[in-house]
Length: 233
Image (cartoon, rainbow, N blue to C red; front, side):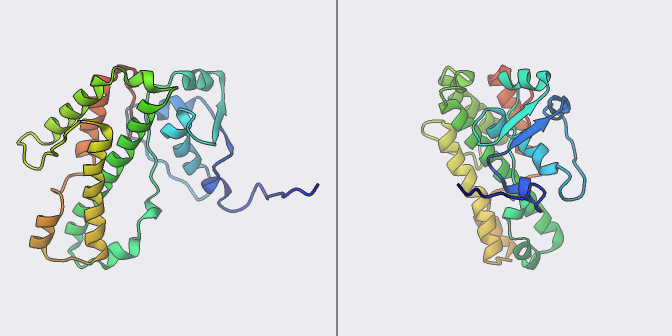
């Protein structure tokens, strides 16, 4: 029987594979802690593999990729204490952003706003899927915690009430629908090359500093789900 053999050293192989095994050392637990870390290195040195290893899909066994490692790593995977989300910036069309006819400072602010809501969108998707999973749902019980979490998060992010999402059921899915529309509106403005500041102010969400809302969401997770004390975005 003929079999297909792929070169294990082929360019960019691990970056796009979805059924491989990743071996991680004890540093994984340090990287999954509540602090900022910058990974630098040439292509192929393992940055993507490390970041994927910290993502919730791998940590909670929701991906075809498998993490292997030391006994300490394997013990951590039995009872993880964080939720990590992974986003490839290459998914954006950088040329459209470059051509957007706004001042660089304005573009930078809208880019931060866009990225902020993309990350929150991905995080809410993770919370929703993990809470619905038969293997991880117990972390989010009872269901009333979900409504309390969302009520606290929206109250913290919109203290004056202006721009606060009006939610009927206070669910992860419902809040995600609002958040995803925010970053899609920014992307639409970029694609359409809208340049009028007045128009942008009327159709786009309030500009936020990168990390402004994600930090508040992380704090709400720690308040409502104490087992996830090391949640990182």
